Amino acid sequence: MQWLDLLSDYTFQNVVIGASLLGLISGPLGCFAMLRRQSLLGDALSHAALPGVCLSFIITGSRDIGGIIIGALATGSLAALTMLLLTRHSRLKTDAAIGTCLSIFFASGIVLLTYIQGTNNASQGGLEAFLFGQAAATLRSDLWIMGAITLVTLVLLSVFWKQAKLVTFDAEYARTLGMPTTAIEAVLTAMVALAVVVGLQMVGVILMAAMIVAPAAAARQWSSHLGSMLVIAAGVGIVSGVSGATISTLSRGLATGPLIILTATAIVLVSLALAPGRGLLWGAIKHYRQKEALRRQQLLYAFYKHPRAAQRYRTTFGSRRMLGKLNRQGYLTRAADGDLGWTLTTQGQAAAKQVVATFEGVAS
Image (tube, rainbow, N blue to C red; front, side):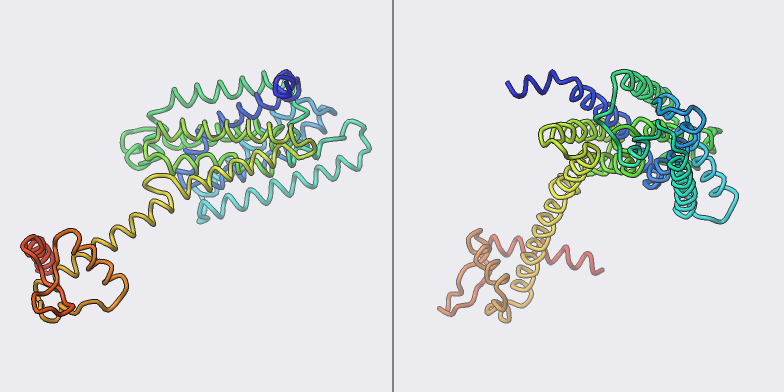
């Protein structure tokens, strides 16, 4: 009954739908930003949105979400254009240009926010909530705007799919084919700015960068194909948003935005640990198997090339354990003189010959 009440709650519905839209748009676009080695791009654009939010309030005198989004998109796009100009027409590297724009635009936003607080405008209350988000204040009309932006962005991405993929992985080759790589990069950056404005209400300008990076980082651990990576990133973003919103509603008093980010971070940590092929656990198992295979080859080589010296080969725990394993597999047997040494069986001789041939082939 408690869950039925929760699902029928107007505020909970708005927050869950908004968080889902945020995950749906930020995950795929974050993949392109990360693969282009511009993971900090979302951080810079989200911080650059703050002066746009403040300018919109100064001009309109209200916190209307439409004006806020237009203002954030304008300053975010201006920051993206500035970064592009700095990297193309100066000696600044991409990370330095991103850091420069982030600092300048965010400082400008803080100055404007301080100015607004000094004007004694009664409508300014809650404006600082855009720093960390205010998901509970999301209205149904806000969701229509967020949904429209998400739909337009995903349609744009599907239209420029081939061009975006080629520019992301090999921009030089795309340039030789006559593609307008600068324009395509600008479109991709503008779409990241659109994702940022969708997340302003939910997680705020400071935490929005995590929603760009975290789903993409988690998806990268599970897939090496761009298409499936985008789908997984969107799924991670949606699960993070819905989970964070649900925990926030059930706990009463905990902020939704930070909980969404913490949920996404937990998924990233699980992915880093358990993802097949790339996960830390998988890497540890692979390293252990390679170490075991090398120790087995070393012992077979030693028993074949130096049988007298190797008969008493039991210096370490790992070597003794491998000797017992080779004995159980039929490669080794106890020496016939009653000593504690070992000797190769017929099966062991054949396997050792292959190991010796491999080692000598590599050495030559």
